[in-house]
Amino acid sequence: MKPNSKQSHRRFDLNLLGYGNRYYIERIARLEAALARKPRVLQINMVGVGEIPADSALLIRSILLDRSPKTRLITNARSSLQNGAVLVWLLGDTRLIRDDARLFFRRATLSEDENTKEEDEWKNSEPEFCDSFSEIDPEEGDYARVLQCINEFLPVKELAGRLIEMPVLRQFGLVENEQVDHFLATAFGAKREPPNALSDARMVKRFRRRTTVKRLAS
Image (cartoon, rainbow, N blue to C red; front, side):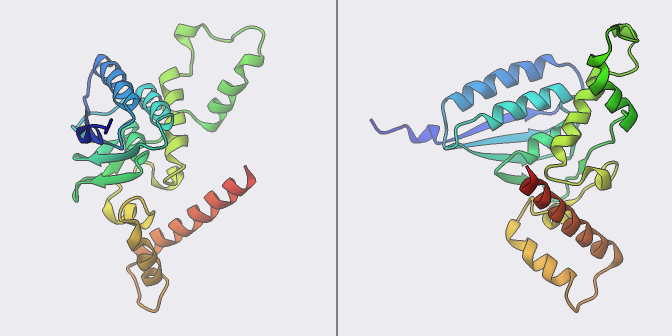
């Protein structure tokens, strides 16, 4: 029986709210149901001024990574995105974004010492703090993991706390991939670029080299 062509390209709206987790719990369940149908294309439309909680963003990531290899994912940012929403958008095979929209992700409040302490906490026979008064916020720990995942696409250390606009996304090959080679040729060619553009181009080159080395070592 020939499959219904209407199921070949499904659209999935994900509103970005500034309050409550109930909405995301419900949408995540529907996302799983949509992916269970193994559509040829699933397009996630992201719109709104809120953000996705870190834990919800990580759960959405796990669901999207577990989708059928035959399902192509399109993430469409119709609004500017921040924090956990940035991660969800980055997971698309094809990423669309409104021309004047921007990305932003803050730094995690966990210091490197606190992160190490959190990882080694299980070694202590008796916890130093009661759970309700722990110095480490579990939600912030989830957000630190979100940043680790974002770092697979964008250099978090250099870009956290900055508004990321379309030119930077192009430089990292996240949108309009076919223009990346042209950009790099222009940035490193005889034509002199503005200082900020040249600095960003060097950052792209360093990040790509670092990512390549990391993948070869793993």
